Length: 308
Image 1 (tube, rainbow, N blue to C red):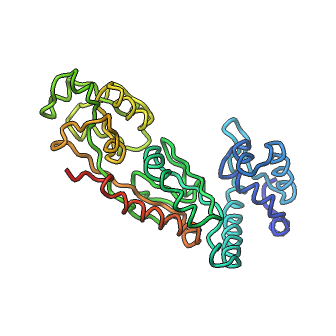
Image 2 (tube, one colour):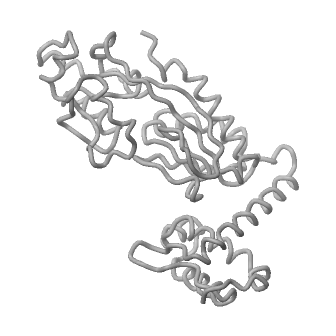
Image 3 (cartoon, rainbow, N blue to C red):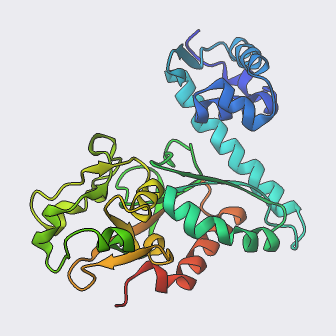
């Protein structure tokens, strides 16, 4: 099966198309089944039925999952347009109070998602009780261009894809260590003394963004000896006295166990960028989440940047 029968596609069941859309975005039947509250066997059967109906193979099945074929890529673009139309209709038909409804999947960094966004989400939920939020806070990002997420808070400005991109906020990183560590190791009065200390950072070959390589910006050849792919794990390592960690101000500052190291000499500046797929940028639910994030960073500006 190669060419999609467009007449048959126009007659396809929307539920089957929604299943196709979810599998295309997840590339995994089990993950799609969890989202749709169906079993993977049913999803596989419905996909095969849809392929038979339209006369084309939509996925290449492999050990990596369900990956879109050429006809599947074309089909995805069409079904996403249909999804946008359905969403616009639903939003226009609902009353003003309940106008903001539906699901928004937001991809963010592990620390920003856990430390800043998650504690504040109750305010968004109270304001819009029919809004469902899928907060994906991990070491790495889902692709907004591929519609793995509706929007993402990224460490660098994306330069490709059909995206609406804006700077969300600047933030600072500082060196932190526990009181116990500082009391039991040589004093640190200058940057060159850091070479004699155990630094905590990311596993180099698992770094998912060049902006996470901080230590070279402080001094040439400065490298962490204790590493983790998780920033929150790095914080815990510092809290337990394992060494000195480079942490965002919003992670290190609230911790009573941690003290600043070389506060006047070392500050790393970074930015968070908000990316939203242009097809859904104007949707009420997406605008609500965007406004929530913009307000949130304004309210947390004191913890995001270092004022001395």
